[in-house]
Length: 162
Image (cartoon, rainbow, N blue to C red; front, side, top):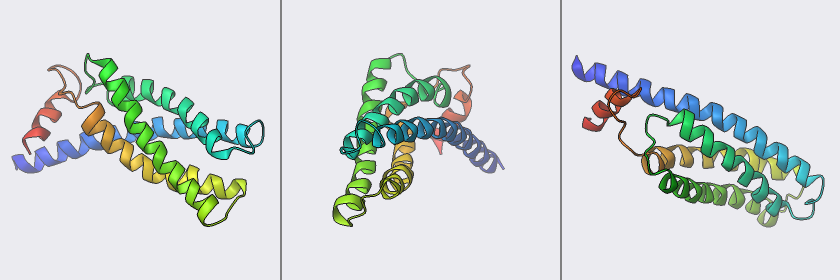
């Protein structure tokens, strides 16, 4: 019975983190694709990959604060600069996933419309990049063991034993 309770608690902890991560990601997606749309139809219409880099960079800054102080607040460490640079590195890899999807769509498959760029980078790339980011944040960026008394600390300690 203890093992079943432990598994249930670990699942609930992961579910709460994933739900918070999803909300932050949804807002980040709106920021990213909203800015991308403005840039694509405006000053960077002839440079769509650069437009994606700019829009994603802005969304990454938002996500850093939201994930650090909301999603993984119980896992953050006092070494915030280490977390920040790991966050930037993991987001760079996530951006690489998005850009690869958009590059393949545009330059390999020949789809050059805004809709094709949006689907390749803003939907397919986003899904693949989001899976990567969640795992990377949890296991590489915000990997500190929570201090006793913080929400989720007991569950984290139990999940480490499984």
